[in-house]
Length: 133
Image (cartoon, rainbow, N blue to C red):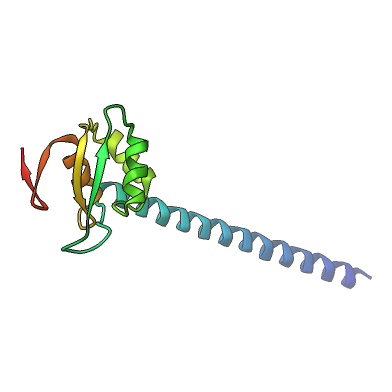
């Protein structure tokens, strides 16, 4: 009888080890996935990509006197100028952007940082090319 009891104990111990290994593996996969997503999120904030390559498509966007960063991001996203309104809003706050009202011609070949510079008046539009103001 003692042989049967110790066999069940060993099987239970082995099962416990396997379950712990599976849990540790799942946690590692979640951590790796979270780290990857976090890296991609940070990269998009600090090294944004344009929606298309040159020459891009020009779109006209009007910024009102009391437009918030969120409202501007909505308009840019609707026009296909940015991929993520959340990223744009975070960039606007992070880089302390003060938007100037007006009508702007922006290109899908511009990244969100370039768009922020144009909408804040740091860069003037000039036939699709930005020039220092």
